[in-house]
Image (cartoon, rainbow, N blue to C red; front, side, top):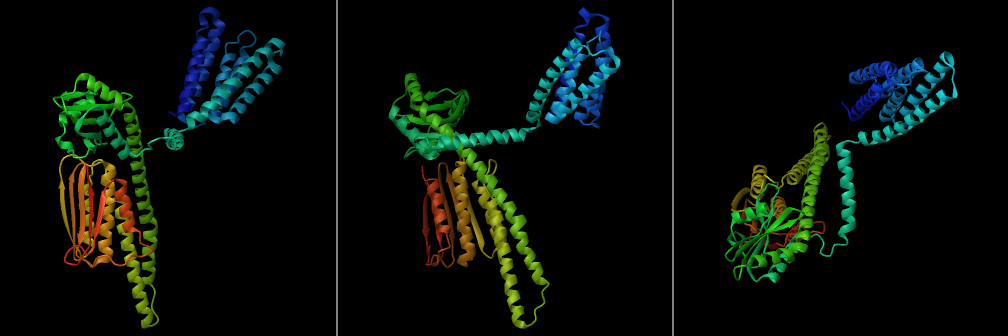
Length: 499
């Protein structure tokens, strides 16, 4: 049953209940009118459930019968008259203003004609009729307003709310003193913690969408796995209470009753309860900034992933199919001489090459790190894909242990690896490609090396190296490109993410 039909049912039931409530004080005439209203409402509801007639036409029929019953029971019984407002409300709900006008016009015509032929149309009768007509128009207008609200789906509402929130974000982001840079805000928070307490080492942990607590940022010289205890971080996250174990402390950063991150640190001396309370108070402003940056980072990552999937579909279903169709058309062309045959053969090879590149592009767009799919799995799939479609032997070495990197870092490392592998595949004429990835969050090292011809002279229309540099800078990583890499051959691309 639709929302409009539910509201119509409620209107019928409540009107009937109001009329029946008058029985104890009104006697038999009201009982007769109540029985008629019950029959009208039941018939209208049955027609509504059958869905063979639109709700607007049901309101018109219901209004006509109710008006006729009101005329038949007049002048001694007015118990049906209040029900005249219900069909008008239903007309407004189902047909908005047009439905409201059709129902009210039907009731007015039936009652006017009925009183002219069956009764004397006196001033008191006309006054009562006008009162209920005006009341019905008011309820009908209310129904028309409700119609617009009920017609909106949950998706419409969600998108409207999203649009409003994005507009607010655009207005507010320009006024943020520290922006929404997650790395910068995390570093500021660690510095604020060191200013409050003398800390030897410190690390900030956040929670991934999969529920894993992973390092977000740590101070210089710190190793996250060696700071505190994993169980203490779990307890602090869920209990939202600081934990002190000797010199080790674990402090949840809470905002609006929600844990945003956990600070794990080693202090110069065992902190007291007052020290922990002072630390929580000092970090409160930075916690708010961190919360906003984490939320924004999640929205940005989700939007980026959706856009990459959309582009992959567009390329696969549009450009790739169109270019492949050109190859089929060429197959039907008969060359007139050997020179044309040679040209057509070259054109076929070029079309095949373009189709192959488009397939690589679709794969690159779709291959990504997700909640259940980490950097290593994405690199493995890329290595299999490239190895199965080229003459290069792809050697993959993965060394991942402990928690995962932040999604942003994993994504950028994957894109850098894609660019380096594609450059080797297209330009190096290499026979071997080595891809090595080592992760000790928050540290990581990615190496892509080939034994090809090395980097050639740069072209004005080539932006691959610059894009790799921008991606590395976006996550604070160091990028090194050596060519020749070894034995005066090949190219080696190394990306390092430090603490």
